[in-house]
Amino acid sequence: MIVVNVGPRSGDSIAEVLYRLPLGRASLLFVLLAGVGISLLTRRARLPGGRLPWATLLWRAGLLMAGGLALQLLDHGVSVILPTYALLFVIAIPLVRAGSRVVGLLAVALTVLGPVAWIALQRIQGVTWDVRSATAADSPSEILHNVLLSSPYPVITWAGPFLLGMWLGRLDLADRALQHRMILFGAFATVIGRAVSLVLVAWRGDPAEAVGFDRLVTSVAHSQMPLWLISGTGSGVLVLGLLLRAGTVVERRLRPLVAAGQLALTIYVAHLLVLDLLVRPEPHVLAEGIAISLALSASALIFATWWRRNFDRGPLERLLRPPWREANAPDGLGEIRTQRSAAPGRLSASR
Figure 1 (cartoon, one colour):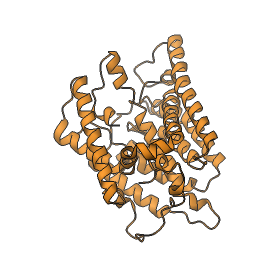
Figure 2 (cartoon, helix red, strand yellow):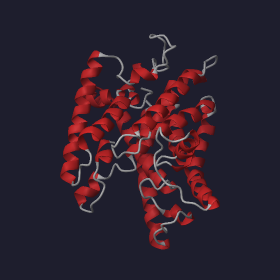
Figure 3 (spheres, helix red, strand yellow):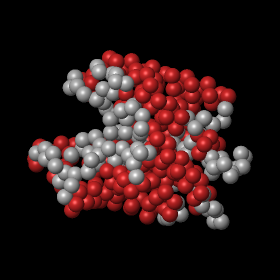
């Protein structure tokens, strides 16, 4: 995430290409994990007599929407993804108790049909949407249209990876067989999505600049197209499967990464503030980007490790607990924390 947001995003050397590998994949990994986290948070709601925590989800959605729109006013040069999370959390409420098959089928359908609808709506309207991130200065109607359709992370296409995460979160993530399937499926999807795109582009040619159905052949990062979603989400499943498989190593040897995952919202907001106040308009060359990314990453790991040794929740993560809930009220994750896969699982939790 930090590498992508720091930049630079240009250059054709091997080092520059490798540096840009997370582009279009880091954000899909986070959305996938957000879906997993929602299922972990709401697992009690699927038990007999369980209560649906709709008020908690709406509270978190409201915070993320307001915070994301405010953060977009800053000059950090990043498209803030938090408003997309907010609307996805709202969409998740009626699906919490839906059958796993329904959630899984919706994830597959939206991964394919969401991009088709994204193109069709622009063709019907005869316009090409101005892809930008809404801010707190926009009207409610502009914000809704932007987050749903015309932002860099439009819900119409990003709902597929999110729902796949919700489906995964209902499975036994500590099961070794499942972890192996995630690794194999993730690797296959990562490669096949890109490979099919390369073949189609070689056959049909590059898509025109105008938004049309010929765009469906591309797998370019943030193109909103199915082959990119398949490849990028596949890499997210691969990473998650590998971390789950290495659960003991992660928990015992990579505690700073676990701590950073538990302070994900705090680190996300903090790195935007640092980019705005101290970094921009840098970096201009790869060496600067690497140095800044390493400095930000190391600072985040050190701070997160220190904080988690002294406090149970991150500074901003505390805000995600609604004020009307008691401090010792269960959050739906208690039983998960006892599992051996707790460390990687908590990277995706609702913190």
